[in-house]
Image (cartoon, rainbow, N blue to C red; front, side, top):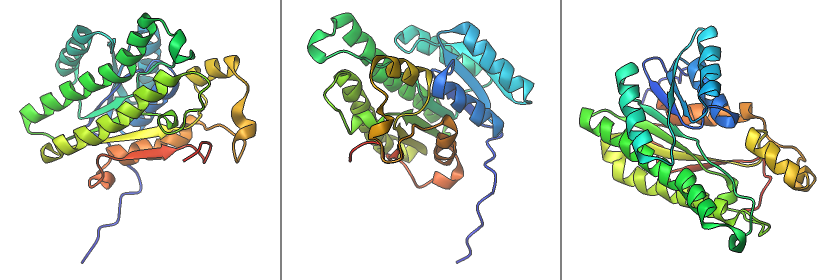
Length: 257
């Protein structure tokens, strides 16, 4: 059997990649990474000025991008966003479900408004985004890739607050597995990345509230967004064509198994 050598550079030319929560942190980095490999990137989020900055950075580097405001807690905002994207650059073929928020409170102290917000942002929104993404591709008989951004908190919860965040990310993992099975026959692969502690806007806020956790990690370091690039690119490239329903842990052995 002859096996073709894999390309040394992942080329996403012709793909339209929608990244939620692209205005900052890991989402911004994901948007820049996908654009650098040829995808037309749709930077989605609520902070229009920051989205404009992401698009400008991509365009200045020779890439293609557009900003589309989407609030993943609002159903109409998501549907309108998809329609706008289709009109501007065509329906997405890659979806990175990155938008998410933490909670830093113990379960019994969370007001119901915060409970609703965390569930809406971390689970309901990504589920609706995935379904609308898939529905459009199915209608066109086209395949696609979904990468849900989970967290190692789905597997390891210390009990010191943020229980609901852990719960929603565990649900994202199950959503990844279930939708992968349902949509495999449509050539839509659904996978997830579960990062450990990486430098980001969210992590910076967390470290201001709690003690620096690096001393408890085997290699006493936190991750850099660059170290997630290869996993993201693998999951959206032809190299992972036989991989679906998988959650890839990327945490440097920081947390328990």
